[in-house]
Length: 507
Ligand SMILES: Nc1ncnc2c1ncn2[C@@H]1O[C@H](COP(=O)(O)OP(=O)(O)OP(=O)(O)O)[C@@H](O)[C@H]1O
Ligand SMILES: [Mg+2]
Image (cartoon, rainbow, N blue to C red; front, side):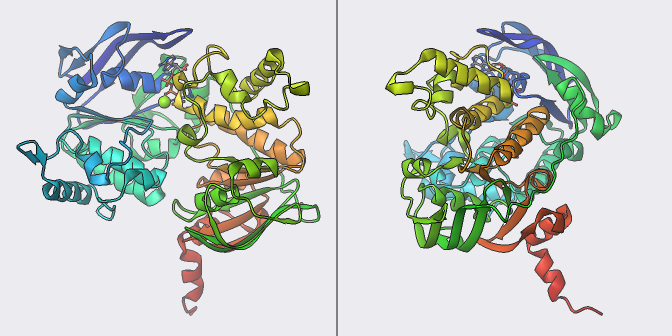
């Protein structure tokens, strides 16, 4: 008898059938990967299993018994715990308070904070993340740490079924390995785990079984050993994907669009780099290397302590994001959901906020101009949405990300001389759209923009970047032209292994 069975699930939203007669079976002691393109229905299936969305049709069985999950509470009671794609932490509360939210140890209604902190600490230690500061305000943590807190909260009980919707999206390689160790331990105890991810290398590392969704339907499902890694992208997308490569461009003779000299701020120190017109600069480093802090400082989200910034040769002090935009510096941030979207507004409004002035000749807003700009972007990025008037809050995770990226494309009819700072641009984006995104990024450079791409994805780095800067612990430790690096040498510098190897006495 299966541990969990979803039978003939149908879920329709206005304009989309997110799940179209889906059957899904999870066994005990199984790690079951759920993969598919952005908008394929993965999170919707997760939400149905979590009791967070009621299906129009179909049933869920747990240990062979029909269960009614009409609320997230019901799922929890059955031992189904879920880490959703979008963070569910409570701001202003500490790590410990978030982890034990709702089950705080208390006497006579008063929370015993000492016990609370102790329990939280034990839990984190059990999960191998004991170095997380339990008293830190979650809001101040980076994306990766926040994700760990969310995971820790899900795993605070003894679950039967664990569902993780893109849990590794902002985790470092080491944090991901920790998480995988933890999942393997749960699996040994018979727990069934559903694992949603766009990272096929992770899927092949950890999963026993795989189910591929496309347009709300299961197109393939079976033991992972029956699949070859090179065949899965085709099953996900539904057609062959051309391999993406790009030629190295030497733009170093062209105008310098952005230069920083000895820039220091919180999280980065003494950074110097240049971005020429027409090139893509890759910013490599592990999570926590200071790349996000550096990029955010360049556009005025964070303070710069010392150093100089030159935009097209002129020294500038950029203190606000508005100033940055006026100077042609555009950041597509890492935590896109939070920083880049207005959830209550629709796709059209989100895509055109920045291009409003450009799309409004003579100060007159032209609805048709805005529509044209927006549908153009929807087409180029393959944004899956029933209409331009759909609330962005209702798009799938990956499609939300595309909207944030897309609003800058809408404005960028004329990208020449602008500098795009892209922080993990394809995180959460499916394999098909990723290749398209890479073409668009190369296209920006080809049209005369300078592009900086901070990425932890070495394949992406080697496809996109003409020159590479590698950061470690807030400093640039190495830089050079792409042809002078391989994925291995970049990784060594990222991890600090290259210097160690050099320092070792040669026999
Ligand atoms: N609350 C909602 N209202 C309307 N449509 C929705 C809602 N939630 C999801 N959808 C739509 O259902 C479809 C499936 O979305 P879902 O979030 O399940 O995709 P996904 O496979 O998780 O994608 P991603 O990889 O981007 O996270 C999408 O077309 C999405 O726009
Ligand atoms: Mg999703």
